[in-house]
Length: 123
Ligand SMILES: [Zn+2]
Image (cartoon, rainbow, N blue to C red; front, side, top):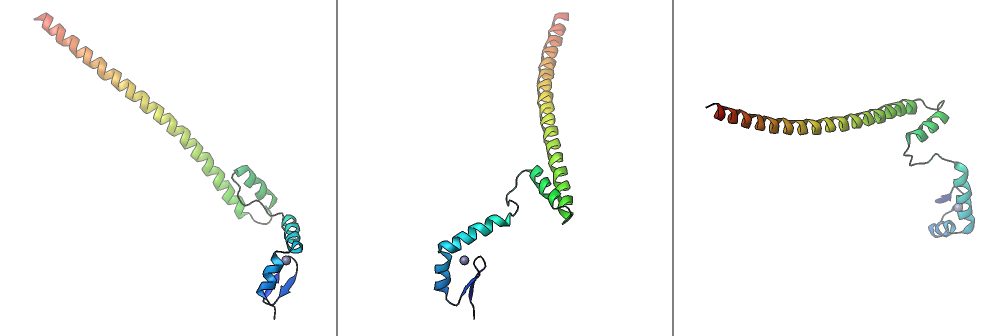
């Protein structure tokens, strides 16, 4: 009965020690290297949506759910960018409003003082 099996080398053994020793052999490591390279799996950590788009394009026939998710993600990314731009605009307008309010209040103050001065003068 085989307990330990190495898929890379088609190597099998009943003994764990043999198996562990096998995993350290050059022959095994070479097989792992060759077979891992040949697999050509898509990269695991993809940051850029454009890269995701490319992969989805390649896999399109296989799965159009990815395409839907991708579209949603692209839409959300666009929306986030839009909202961030809008947010910056709003913050800019808020700052401008504050500046204008301060100027307005200051202006009102000097106007009031002038009125008071005028009233004093008229007396
Ligand atoms: Zn092996």
